[in-house]
Image (cartoon, rainbow, N blue to C red):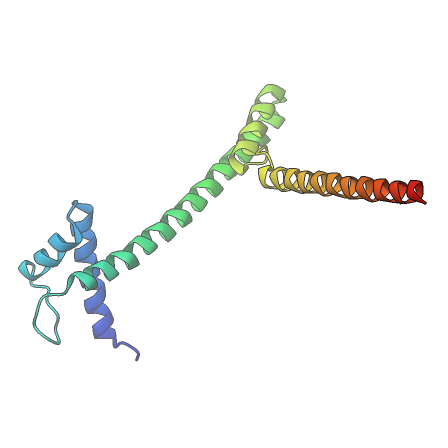
Length: 156
């Protein structure tokens, strides 16, 4: 069921108040108790919103806040990268190789280009360990079979 524009507006207004109260340190229960004092009640029933509604609102808000933080971080990172590259262009013009090197290192750090590839190393170590264990097992089996064959030949 699609919500009307008016219903969406009411929900957003309630969530703005919920966000404001949460950012002031109130718990879910305290927020649910505070909403009626602010004149915010369920328009269909005229009763206060439940703790569950406040909880759901907070989940939506926290997801939005996380997404916004990621976007803001990405924008800030892009701006910093542009500034570093502009400064590097100027350093090249000035033939300041020390500064060029410093700015390149800052770009590498910002982009994480010098981070170790731990997952690949860890996975490869596990594969090597598994391969060594398998090889040791095969050698043991081979030795046991070879010993049994030798015992059979001696018996004959």
